[in-house]
Length: 265
Image (cartoon, rainbow, N blue to C red; front, side):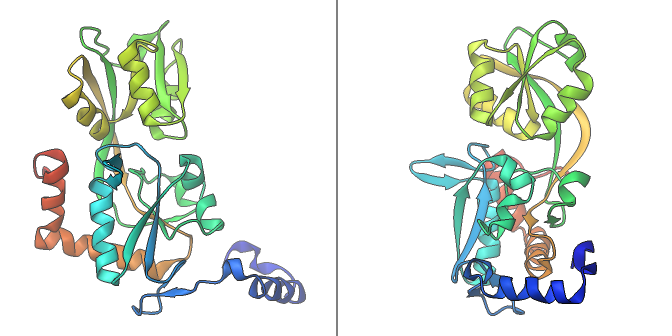
């Protein structure tokens, strides 16, 4: 219950009655595990925002990636199939996609932050990340401040954008709707550099040798899988699956598949 549960009893009962009569708020999917309910029976709906390789990206008509494989373990444990829902990142990070019942969970290379924790509940951290700078090869920048008087691109509603705004005095900041547009802007010279999480930038330079990751900033970020506030049953299930995957080697196998090496301890 939220702090708004202090409404007068009559008003609260009236609100409950209205909600009870609204079919869009009813969970009809059960996996038979501790009463855990899903939006659609037999399906675990995952909100994400494409592209964000190697965490989630569309290849040959199918969405694949590190996050996808990890959530597949959760779906398998529940005895259901995962369904990817591609949606703007703002709807994910504000919790709105949970409020309108678009998905059961969000796995989108999403950093756990105090602001996001107010509008959703997070799983235990499953990936360590930090911010990094991407430039065209031969045009190094060791910190955001080096770009004074130049253009720095960032992805909308991300921690990279927050970092750029905090450290980019005198830098012309350019916002992009998604990672793909940001990367293209750096490669084409539309911006002098781009800031985003190190994992996706290092993945990009593998196939784009004319670009380079020139700096990393130790921001101590951790990715988490989001669920609607109060959905403890699903959150605990996700935590249990992550813990098991890390103990039985499944996590290391998936990590190596997408990053070419096992995670550093």
